[in-house]
Image (cartoon, rainbow, N blue to C red; front, side, top):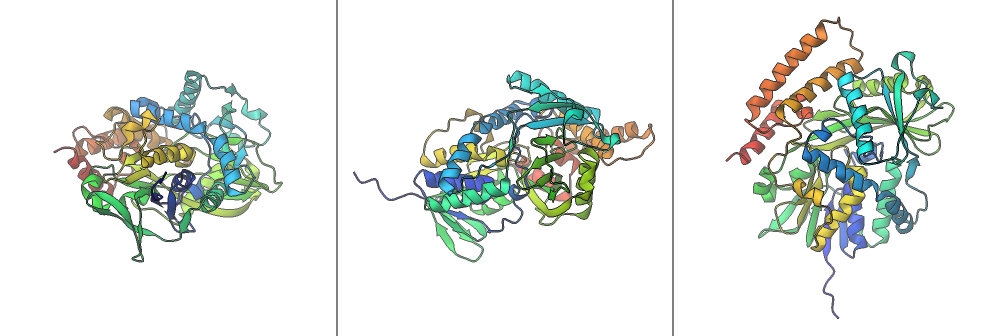
Length: 479
């Protein structure tokens, strides 16, 4: 029986999400071309700690809405696929080394954060573990062999989550490259300019050098710059949440005695960021991360102040001997942050055109699940993941909580930033600053729109450019 010509697909993006989708499509019989610069500039995946965190990433703001709960379910389901993903990639890449680099996660509550953010998120993690009946145990931080912080930054409480591991992100990307090529896929070292659309259907991808890659299906998974490729579906793009970059800095170091923790060691998420964390890699290499700063445009190089802050936090809060470590690499990544804080996954406004981005801090962790989901949609099937239905790219802004909750979160995290930077202010000033911030942020969101409210990160980092993009997006859903 004649099965017809092989379907072709172009995947734009070679971070963990794009590379995983390309590999999955190729595994299902598609002729796949993956587009992206070989050195992966700006990619979040290269700078990622690659913690397979579901519960360790829980925050009070995540639990404040149904959409946040859906995102938690997404993370929970994604975590189940990693053992299978590791086995598949070992077989299909020809590299038998495991992806896993850490056994379990220790979450530490130390004296450097604020009660509202750090203690609140620590309690939220513990409560969610109980809700999902996930094994965990309380742990005395002083019993951890590797941990040796400055006494002024010592940890007060701890918990161990045995089911939350980490992978080596560099090894993951290499194995995804190898597995794609071995399965017959093609890798193009180039930059995409735009998706081509004819009569309402995606027909290919135009590169910056003028070449066009024809395709039956196009998947855009290019992180923070994904939406810039969609000029030919302008009406749909106007109704998608615009994105900014969550620029972050991480480092790889070699400890003086080459001693490493066996598990991930981290704080709860704090002050608009993903918490301080240390992740063991192979051969005495330790990953330390990571900062998170909202930026209108992706950044390629680290700011000296951000690097100084990260290293200072690691030395003070994790191990004072890290000051004697060798600095092997400074890594910069750009997380895709949508205007409402939730992923953009699914139909992108033309037949045969799909989007998989906006995953913020969770893209690498979610990549096996997203690969299965998008590949099933491309095949014309129905996805098994009901919780992704609200994350369709063409959508009105999703609420991550009430307006009052968002303003409160912005204030609490901005105040926590001061404590994390060790500000030295007299006791009467923090409440005065907090009152001013509350009035300022409250007025800001009221002026933006009567009912739509961006996430706290964007409220605190508001610029003229971010304000303009939000105004255009809100107007598209206010007619």
